Structure formats: C-alpha cells, structure tokens
Amino acid sequence: MTKKLFVLPLMALMIAGCGNNQVPEEELKIICPTGAPALAFYTEANNENFVTSSTPTNVAAELQKNDYDVVIFDSINGLNSIKKNNSNYKLAKIITGGNFFLAGINKTPDEHGTYPLPTADDVVVSFGQNLIPDAVYSTLCREYWHIENKANYVAGATDALATLKTGKYSGQDVDYVFIAEPALTTAMKDQNADTFGKVSIVRNIQEEWKKYSGQDGISQAGIFVHQNAIENKKGKLRELLSKVSDNIEVAVNNPDLAAASINLYGELTDQAARFGFNANVVKLVQKDGRNGFGLVDQTRSINTNEFLESLGKPTFSSEYFVEL
Image: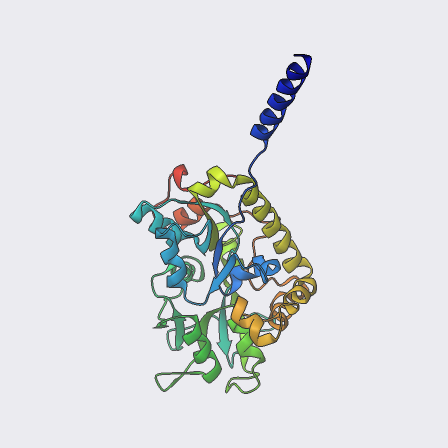
C-alpha cells in the first residue's frame, strides 16, 4: 500500500509537469519585396522562411491571404488594402522613411554648392503617378519649392533608372529624374551609361520633407503582422522586431559589416536576386552615414497618421496598428 501511495503522487507530478510544458512557437514565415526594405533583413539571407519577391504586386496580394506571418510592404498602400479587404494584418513598424532623390543631368551648382530646381522649360521624369512618393514630390513642389510639377511619368523605378542612364525621354533630353536608391547610385556608377559623370543629386527628398513638415521621414515600407501570429507567436515577433532594429543600426552606422554578411550568401548576382542589390551597392549607398536606403534607425520616429495628415489624406484608426 505504501508503494502505491508513493507511485501515484509521483505520476501525478509527472503528468502535471508535462501539462505545464509550453509548446515552442513555430518559426515566422516572412515575405519582403526586394530593394531598400530587404536591407533591414540582411541577416536572413539563408533563412528558408524568408521569401523575397521582385514583383511588388505579388507581395501586396499576400495581405489578402493568410500564408505569411509577416508581410513587408508599402505602409500606406498596405493599410488601404487591409481596410478595403478587411484582412487580418496590422502595421507594427515602419522600417524605411524615404530613399527618394531628385537627380539632375548636366546641372551646375551655385557658389554655395546648391543645385537649381526644375523650371518650366526643363524636362522632368518621375514614376508612380499619384502614389505616395509622387504625392510627396508634388507637395514639395507646390508648398515648399513653389514650382509647378510638370513631370512626365514612367511606370516604375526601373524605367526611371533607364531614363537616368540614357538621359532621354521620348526623344527629348532629360534635365531631372525623380528616382529611388539604390537605382540612383547604380546609374551614377555605371560607366557604360550615356550620362556617366553627368548625374548629380539635386535634392534628398527625405531631407526636404523634414524641412517642410518637421517629420523624420516618409511613411514608406512597414512590417505587417498577421493576427494569428500576434496571438500565437508573439515571442517570435518580438525577436524579429528586435533583430530588424539591430540590423538597421548596423546598416546605417557600419554598412561594411552588413555588406560582409550579405557577401556570405554567394556571388554578386545571387545577392542581387535575393535582395535586389549586392554587397557592393550597400557599401556605396550607405557609406559615410548617408543612409541612401532611407532606413529608419533609432534616431528617427515616423508617425503614419501624421504623415498622411501632411498630405491631406485620410488617416487610420488604432485597430490597424499593433505594438508588440
């Protein structure tokens, strides 16, 4: 009898102990567009659960599905999509705050080193008409620079890059191109480009926006998290957000270290396919604290609704955001 009394409590303790064991959280499934946002995930090159896509519409479509725990996408378009489709994602963090520039071809600075803004006679080429970057540029033209936005529009950043390299648009000589990094540096360093040695950075749009609005940048790429992940993988989400913050600090303040990590992935062509850029581009675009990728480090804070208010656009209620 004594033996039974000893064994039963022991078994009960074992069963109770098993019941208290927590099931480990599964790894996060993440999808990210190639380009500037991907630099914040440079440590994930060999993570099979981290997927990149060079087609933004494919990434946007994931906000209507439930296949990924984390979707990296343009914050404003993402929020609009979630609202329209009543989908299960919330915006957790802004990671890029403006990698846009106004580039000039054959422009000469004044005695203070300032390049002239476009005039009514200049040929200006931009991309993404009526999208958020274009809205920022148009607002700066109208409200801050006090010039008319007479841009000719091409479909996307790739077309803008081609225009900056050739210096031509519909047979005309181009004076200015509104473009994003790292495409700008790609054009400026391409010795085979027709405009090699003739391209200069006329305005950093992020800096101009801060002068105009007082805000630290543009509400650009954001991390969207699925409701199920918020409920069941909160620990993993917090780990990811912490890692992304650390990655951004390194990419802004020690880009050579970030580039060295990217180099471990393989050949330059493999790196470009994975991220949309290679290690050499990271060194050039990020060097000397320039942060051409526009990553939002700890010195900056971007409020999406304040940004939208500055553009005169509708804002979003708190249910579309999450703090982890």
